[in-house]
Length: 155
Image (cartoon, rainbow, N blue to C red):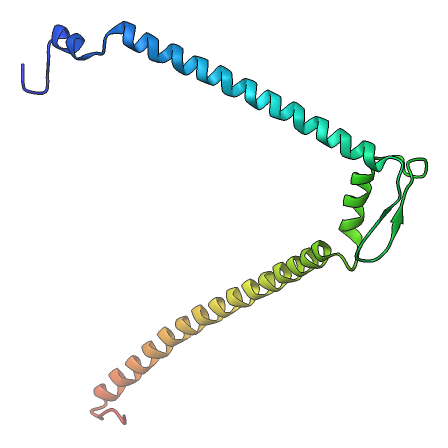
């Protein structure tokens, strides 16, 4: 056996006692169960708050504070007022979120155009590089012809 190998007995002696591992496992399982119960309670509270907001909006008119458009009451609006307001925000020309969204779309379009321009420049540069190689070969060939004629390069 070398230094890195150990007998089964040595390996077993290095393991923590089973009862300690079992206690730690039980404690972790209890902690997970408590956290899951907490998550369930918070989820229920969140659902109750969403329903409460919908109930509050159900018999009211809602106005957009940016453009003044008016929605409601419930009889005229078949879906929850919060959903109506969210849908309005998507189209309201004066709402900051709509303005920001439009700016994002414009910037994305400009970015695509810029990327296309960069691709064109790269293609142009690569074509120029190929032309430069051809030109260098032509200059070399001309130099060779001049040498063969016993003439020196003009440049």
